[in-house]
Amino acid sequence: MTAFEFTTTKQIISEPGSLARLPEICANLGISKPYIITDPGIVQVGLLAQLDTAMSAKSLSYGTFSEVVADPPDHLVMAAVEAAIAAGADGIIGFGGGSSLDTAKLVALLVHSEQSLSDIYGIDNAEGPRLPLVLIPTTAGTGSEATAVAIVTTGETTKSGVVSKLLYPDVALLDAKLTLGLPAQVTAATGIDAMVHAIEAYTSVHKKNPYSDMVAKEALRLLSANLYEATFNGSNLAARQNMLLGACLAGQAFANSPVAAVHALAYPLGGRFHIPHGLSNSLVLPHVLRFNAKAAEHWYAELNECLAGSQPGDTTKQSCANFIRSMEQLILSLGIPTKLSELNISAEDLAMLAEDAMLQTRLLINNPVAVSFDDALNIYNAALIGIHNG
Image 1 (cartoon, rainbow, N blue to C red):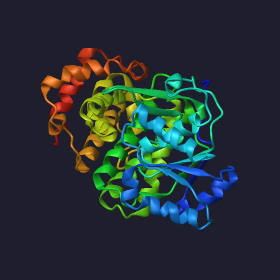
Image 2: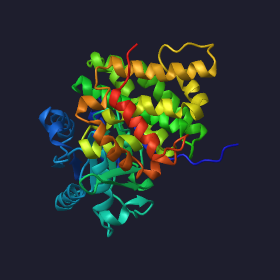
Image 3: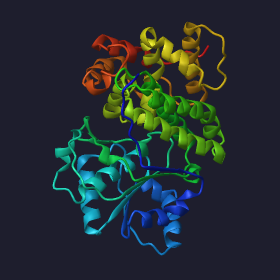
């Protein structure tokens, strides 16, 4: 018997066109003055206009903070909090990618709080109450709508996390129509990010449990079967909806069985070289999988069953090898960078990256194999060269 606790978002709505239900959702949550947290790109591509159409249909007015940037810094989060207070917001709607959703979580928590942002860094340091919160992802990657974590940039290359069950939204709304305009490379990189969440949740040595295993495997099945189609036929609404659901399920999985070395080695790439998070994960994933295989072979063999085109009847060793190679082939097929050297990273940078990675102890402790500085350096060296096609 495995003793565990599984927590997640109270309500998840997965339906193309469900943005139209937002006024009803607000009414159910007692929100009369919603405040939208989003980013300039959402405004530029016209997605905010879609939200406006939904709200206008019920004559529901709202305020907007649209200045969120990737890896939001602490001062930006506090600017959003002050703007929401000034607007008299009684509910927060996060609308966009993971950075917008993370910012929205913190705004909902801090509007009526006597705590400062710095008070709540870490695990379970936040206190309630928070404002009603709705999260609407426009990318299929982070799964932030189903996690109790928000990441904030606190220095030039450093980040801090807030972990609290208070950060789970009241409603997560998954509407694939909002993802139809995503560029192919963004779709690809964020999709690999979601797959990494599922893989690392399934192989985490802390808090791995039957429920997280179940949703991780279903997430991987959905993501592997739909990522290529969503990337190269972006108007396929069914594929896009499956990707959103897969990313959400992967978020549920790693919210309860945390991620490990892939993320630990990816974070320095974002912090030092501003490589998008999904792409950072993709660049190191194959090499961490090979490093972990000696301890995680049976888990990777089980996950191989979830990949499109997997072959039954192989030995555990063969299935593990097939899983790793299938992930490599998928990454190669997506046309995204596969080598650190393609992103102006040189061999001279790798020791610095390895030093940064070793600071990610909260992630590294979840890895099935202990990671030393030399291990991290070897993984980065392999990522510098990249995947060999053949």
